[in-house]
Image 1 (cartoon, one colour):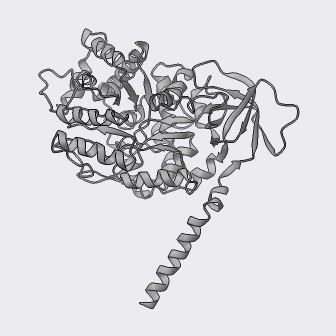
Image 2 (tube, helix red, strand yellow):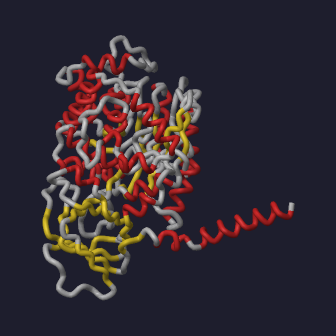
Image 3 (cartoon, one colour):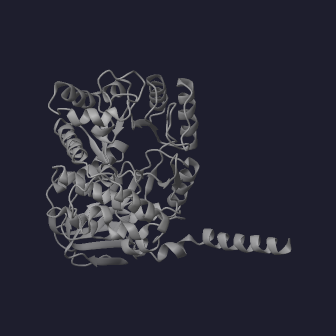
Length: 480
């Protein structure tokens, strides 16, 4: 008993020491920190879609952008740190709008576990300075991690916490509560709003009555509801007041002939979408309805790419997109084996590649009609999508979909901030905004693959070393 007590006391003292001195751990990952930071000779992509500006100077103080100019100040301020970024580009920090804190663990039925150690660091390391969790399986953990990050005791992005899934009867995984009706949906929304969740996500088997109830309760509190739907079509959901729809075309069941109310048609969705004409009146009506009702769409192209035949054998980025060694190295052995096994089983179904292209075309048509497209990675699927890395891949795939690099960057930065109501503070580079920035070597406006070359990530004016953060979680994804 004495030995056990001694061990417990020892662990308690160690944990207390870490908790009382978080700056000691944080400091090893900081590359730039001073009362005033001056970034010189840098190219700026400001996130608004405007052309890149070369040879700029950005002055940062008090966590905010104080000035932007075409030439370096002749006399750097006292107590300043000047960083020469010749050959680099500064972009706004990415705003990840489908960025879970969990990862698939395999099994049947499938199980998911929170990645509370590895994912916060990886999001920040790869330039994602703000995330919306867009569905939670460990909500109290997510809320506590947000609190620890906000108080400086953990390293990670700014977090907007989405409550546990609002799922109806028939969930494919036991990590989701199944609603028992509209009143249960109301109870869930109010309980988690009281706990600190700021958004909600409806899932594949929710009924119209449950969705209506959830939307009503969330809107009473000034909060938003998104959905990865199947039992409800996009136009129905828009009429019920939903604010956002996840995954674009590939989650829309409304075009299935004889679809039954409140029932997910399963595999019939993809089978039907393969034959769907994007120029048909039905599709045009769906797009116009979503735009008229201000329903945003979240693009999550990486999760579909990982589960399909390669869109391009070499990928757009610096390494083959589906077997990127940097991604594989942060996975645990078990997670890596699970993913590589799943990849080996992927069918070379040219029909799905065509459907994937159609989903890309749908997103472009939605934007052309005036819709708000936002972006995320969705680290689920077959386990090949990892925090941060997948967010960068999403930007590349938006370019593959036909957006210009500047348009794709705006979708992944400013548009997400706008949806969150944070665009006055984050999402673009402008005087007075928070200094949430990513520095990459190269010019993503010309070669979007160079967005992967992240060097430094600034959050509230503090510059973190991307590679050191990545190295600190080698082998941890899939464990914690």
